[in-house]
Image: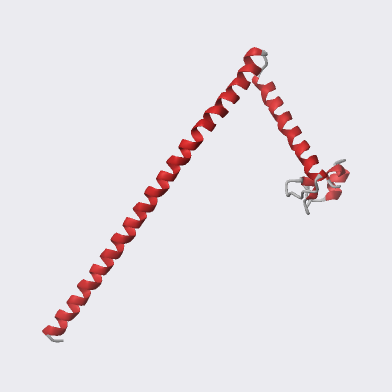
Length: 133
């Protein structure tokens, strides 16, 4: 190898290193811009959700205050009442969607596999055959 060829190879190597460095800088700049854009979007979503969160906290706090302080009931009865309300609302929405012929995977009775027991004979022997219509 002569001097001229070595210089040419050295020049190509430097150009390649320069291109690689520019590519890394471009990727880093794009990554920072993407992170900044995502951060701004998160901040915007937080700004939109702030009044909703405050309203929900006010509603929940007032319900807890009414149930526990005004009615002199315990927190356990509050949890029981909430559970009953959720259970009844799920039942009503299930009946309504069945009446309207809306199919949903949320119906435990329409699962292709028995729920919560693995086999219907076990459930029927336990007196839980009503789970499998």
